[in-house]
Length: 130
Image 1 (spheres, rainbow, N blue to C red):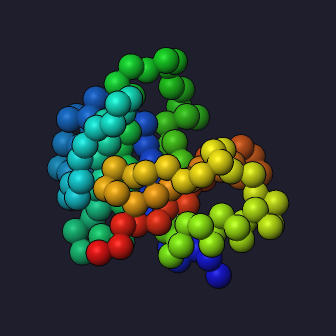
Image 2 (image 1 turned 45 degrees about the vertical axis):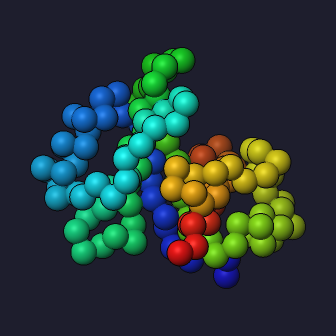
């Protein structure tokens, strides 16, 4: 079995501070990591005592379109031990990845995206080995 666990669920937000405050105060989420890329702001949060499953809040710095209620949950991510072996495995099973190779994650790991049967966005994540 290639999949080890559900990694995180990505949620599109319009105001990062407001969203972090909401998930923290309302549900007790703790911020593990917060940062920016050239195009997006990110925050990874988990529930105290359950750091193995997270939500990822994503804010586009320059949104190109409005998000509707159907597009708020952006993707479902799965942890894998080796992204290279996983890509080979899933390509043999017919998965077509959206990029030709894995991309870096905010914390130094690697990830790759693909679509499920209803075009839902899915992601494999290889965490940085410590």
